[in-house]
Image 1 (cartoon, one colour):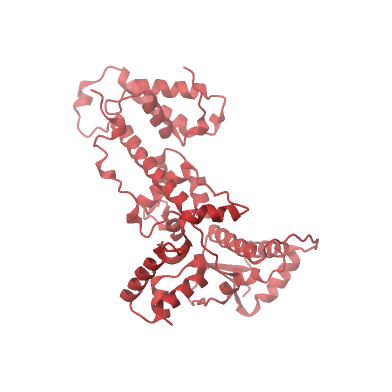
Image 2: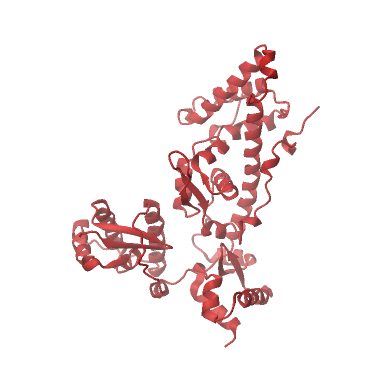
Length: 181
Length: 242
């Protein structure tokens, strides 16, 4: 049996849990480089139009998901197709955490200007952020980071894929605040 | 001043200020604090009857704005202007507004990604396979976890139960008390046995039994009869009788 076939079988069996590179390396008894090659190779095979699946690596887990152009066909068959929407406030909070992690709740509140206690709890319950430790400052506040599940729901292999944000250049003129004189 | 908008439309005082700046075409780099403060106050007046009692953050920013405004209106002491290292509250506000605006923009990108991802489906790991996956029970388990670990673990258990028991519409009334289940659990946890929350709850025959089981676990945790540890996706439970 080829490594392609084995990879396909493993990915099917593990579903949305996915597997990481190390697990594949051990299962197939090949080195890391070969795992990467195999994944790229299989990914290309699936890109063909007569395949309905796509291989992704979100948050360090390799898994199979359906191609996005199948969405309508599948959605028509689903009874409960109401996507759980994230509120604008939730998205802003997540953005702040993703860019500045590890970050304390107080630091988040300084940027948002609103109390973020409930929001942090909600995002934690949704498994989008988690406690990554405690800051070495008075009161030892909780530090938050985004979770692998955050990476998955936002289609991210690494956080570097987020658009660049130049926080250190805040003094520069910004489109919104262009001077009128 | 007539505002036809409500406080629910904004994610906080900075959001409101950005709206006012855009709407009134204010120039933030030569910030007219007086105008901004007036707009802000007018807005708060307009929505006074809404949920302002909970929006204390708005009032706190308003206090800041009024402070800036009063400083702008008062004749300035030249020595204060010349002094170095005096923090300029206006610049601080501008910096905060710009930083907040950046994150607002990025969150739009996040929303797009979220929507795209929700159009692609994956199949859940079957409940049967999940039980068989090798999980190492480490010697070094620490039993200091937060309730949120338990919450997210329970959410997973419920999801798996839903998948394993599709279209369960039967109605049964079985009187089952948490105390009875605690008795059962005490026996199970004798001899230092360690269970995962999954294993413990997967033996439930019905959703009701599953819930009572979970309540029993919570009760025993409260009474200090169980210790809990969270490792990866698993919640390990062991008795604390000795």
